[in-house]
Amino acid sequence: MICRFTIIPDGNVLLYQGTAGDTYEDALLSLGINPDTVLIFFDGRSLAQDKKIEEDEVRIFLTGSRG
Image (cartoon, rainbow, N blue to C red; front, side, top):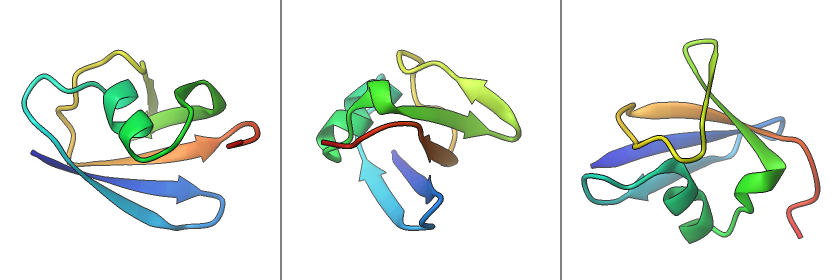
């Protein structure tokens, strides 16, 4: 399973290749992003961090420091 993460506002794209059952929190942590500092959107609606990844592309809006 592959999911494309577009980071807003900078437009960088990260690809996550995981396994069935992975959550957005799993993916973000593996990409070095603190899940508590972002909002995840698909098709104009917010997704929970603990949701299993079913979408092939989402937007990640930075809300705080990545440090």
